[in-house]
Figure 1 (cartoon, helix red, strand yellow):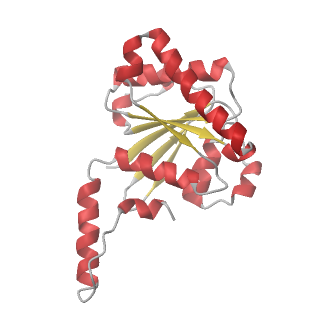
Figure 2: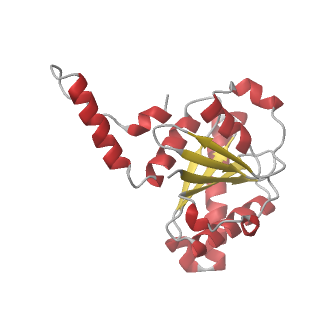
Length: 209
């Protein structure tokens, strides 16, 4: 059974670039030539952990999906770090609430993306501002939402390790069988290297390379 991940975001937020860099080894510089996503596209990957990534167009809403959200392990919402406008924040909040109501166990991740486009000072300012805006709006709708809905924020860029690190952490939370897989890899390594000290192997290192 594949682990399903829903990839959402506004237009030109970098969703498709993320998918291409992570799974198709597309050089970051070539993402400039990618076409805009205009329809829902499903990508399957036969890695150690079989994945199915649903790349959604920017104008798509959750009620347009033909499957229940309970089938997804994770929802990733991508927002451009320079996109501080209200429509983007409002859309994230609405989707987060809708996803949580339908599937409380779903992992909710926000990738504050294209971090490389700002200097360190402005990058951290926008990073904190985006987080606070989302949490404040959740609290304005219902004080309980801010406490009950767990959202994980990641600062990412396709030009450095931050994207791979964020996806590794995201995937780690999405896979219930992960401890079992790590044990299998550790046993395998022990059998292959009986004369050496046992090494602890993390499945997530596969996705950080």
